[in-house]
Image (cartoon, rainbow over all chains, first blue to last red; front, top):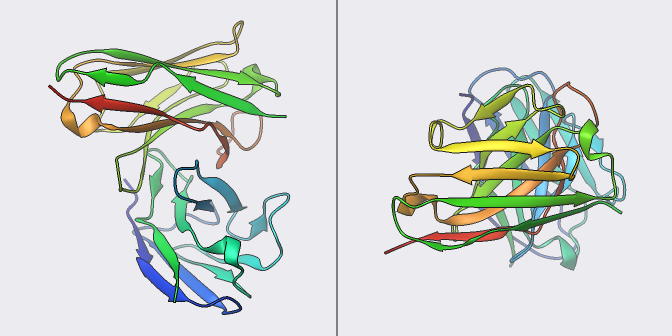
Length: 107
Length: 122
């Protein structure tokens, strides 16, 4: 299985901040990396796939980068609705695996 | 619009069985690979199982292999998860999720249902 290390696990930030979340793979996965947002009590929603492709309807303040083993999710200007938990996920191989999650909370 | 509605969750004793269903609408169900993903209370996401659009290939997490069976009925637009020999550590919200794109290539989870809670407790 491909292991994923996501950091930080908790991020305290203010509205308007630029935030970055990292995801590192135990082996290369090309660009088969997705990012999801989950709000309390809700199902996750796809934000970015293929490492950097924005899902339809997702605001452009979200962006993704990386390939191989190191990936990054950036929110350029944090909005109130962005306070949530974010997960990276690889779909290069089975079993599909997720990072441990990053909770973005209000500072 | 796309809808995935899970059902069948509930409280079951250790060693018991449960069958989850996921009713799909708003897209051509028979063209999409489907997954089950679970989330234990207060924990992260764990992928459970996948079935190809035509049911010809299935994959499972090691934690459920030999105990859980994924299946689908494309005539009823429904995905299933048969769970046997349930353990306390299987307690979680179970989500069904569709592949982002139709076909047999590898895709992220494009859309998720709202989930159904399974509690394994005596």
